[in-house]
Image 1 (cartoon, rainbow, N blue to C red):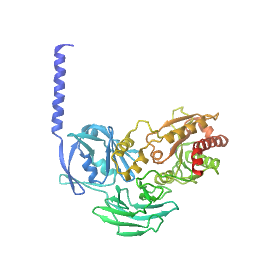
Image 2: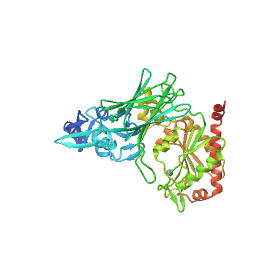
Image 3: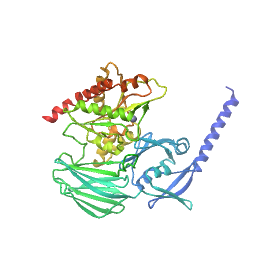
Image 4: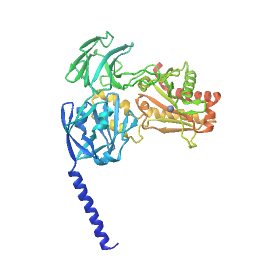
Length: 478
Ligand SMILES: [Zn+2]
């Protein structure tokens, strides 16, 4: 290398450093008002970025960060933004950096600028359905206003369930005051109402406005604990009606004051046939994923009959909303979601069993959630744990089930850990997603079209589930 070449490369480096310095100094600022809170937005490549913690707080969102993601929680709606290094990079190199409840969509990444963690204002505003406007050189964001629609109750002999139905996802917090459980719904309005529940464990629920929050006060009987979690709103789709957002509160002696996951007394297997109705899933000729999953769900159910309680998320050609499926998963000792795969040009074949591993490297919302667990209030912990905890139970279940499939002569099975299946992590106990085969593989299509082979597969799956549950069934009957 010659001396002049070295000198010129130094020159280039200096020019680059000077350029960066100029760039850093020239970040344009504009006033940003979020529900009356005044902040400053910085413009990167024309996109407005706001200080993350202040911005999330003003919007009523819980926030957690990890090395590579920022997680924002609005009740049952969980946004995850990838975290780029610098805000300029975030605004220019990322266009699909957003996930809402595990589904990826358009949006800019979060990034750092001026020593702060910054969030893309438009991306977050649109993702939570808030309004964004620009007014004489400043930005105005109006937080989402939600409305409490109803407080419904449901009694069983062991517990009472209150369901706060809200017209859209909204953030909430809860705490115990003396013997009262107090839940605050952020940016939510509602009528002053005293609901008479007249249950064994809950007598009343009082709804009162409290600033821009709505307070729901539930006196607890001395022996009662509670468990609280949120389920996301679902918009109407073909064949299904819209479902409001719900904050679900279970109260009874079986719950602790420091809420823990549901503990079912009757061992229940919930079978979730993927797709349905207008949503056929993948197809291969006359074979449709939605029909296959329902057929196999029924066969597994029949094989388990009389051994455990079996419930289905659907038992016909309907397509239950994600919220309905999630809700069903919460009641399960074992939750199995059935699907099929297809990848044109691939020669992959066989059964694939997905579970959420407790020690798989966590990414995205799970990593964010794990961080949040360290500082979360007791009442938020159960929700978080449900969303983020990998499950040793699920791993054991996957191993038992795959061994049964491998014992069949005509099926291969692969056990894989899955980081992004919301439903798997929402189920409190063992949960699997089983892809029954590949519609892109001719041998698999033949196997999945053959009633005898299907019955064998379903029997193997049922035997695996039962083998796994047997110790629990014996425990429950003791
Ligand atoms: Zn599917």
